[in-house]
Length: 396
Image 1 (tube, rainbow, N blue to C red):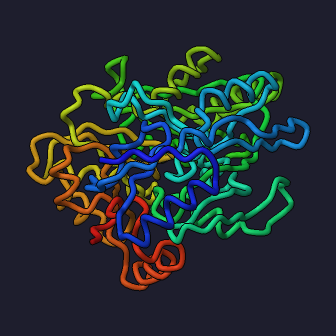
Image 2: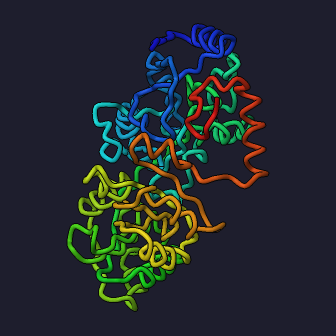
Image 3: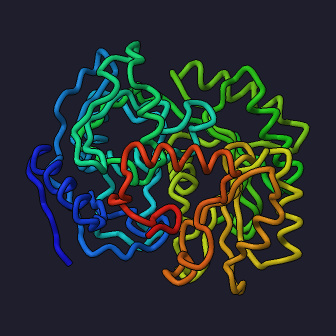
């Protein structure tokens, strides 16, 4: 295996252009923390992008940060924290889940995978905070899109195309993102002992209230540290506002049982577990899925799956995101999960052995029209399928 380590965009473009001409696919590697996501690749060469690192421009007053795509997320979060700001889409740290603890999550990796945590229901996905970038396409061409100001919408569609492409369209070298202030306070309204149906109704009531929760999750008894189901709604913001909103929301949820208000420290610890899915870090032989569905459909989906496979689970995004950890199913539960979903959602395989990730679709199969559109986009950026070949769908 050849390891390429370009030091600037021109060198990167030259390497990719040569690989395209010779039909030699390249595996893109930033920090390596998400290397296990997607289908296993059999590429002969690794393109290491570590040289594209470092914060290049940060304007706290403008709520905008620009950094090299391989900049460690820890470095970015430290700089933001010093100014009382954050990445509002709350990207998860899945190193415990994926067993890549020695690797460093990077800004480019988070954006390329379009990762977002519990705050997505209020703040949107990573793509909604992705303002601009520089990159090298699979043709070996340097190009830019977007800008450094929030009101500049030029290239927004390209940012959205790159987010969630898993490095199959272009190698990001620089990214600009919108940032937001860190909330002064966090409170969590916790209800105990609810079943899935009641939990979803409680979360829906909370999310539709005027109190603007920044997270709603349900931990069944099997995965709760307390041994009893916990249904959570998070309220964030200035201290007086948070105190008043949390108290009011607690009253509104009183019909579901006695609710407790958790303070900053306990809230932060709980939501970190939800964000990182660290509940499923062990045992590492469970097959982990991330399933998007309508919140109202989640309880029935869990019930149907419970008759087909053995699994642990929890709900995020008010019931719209179902995390599953499956055991004992030959196909990791793929057939049962996708049959239960029908056309009402999509399931992504997050953790599984290479053999299983090669045997079943890791990403939910697209309808023909959407698959054709995806193929045309890929043709525009990387017609020879040089970049991360086969990571999303089988390719030759």
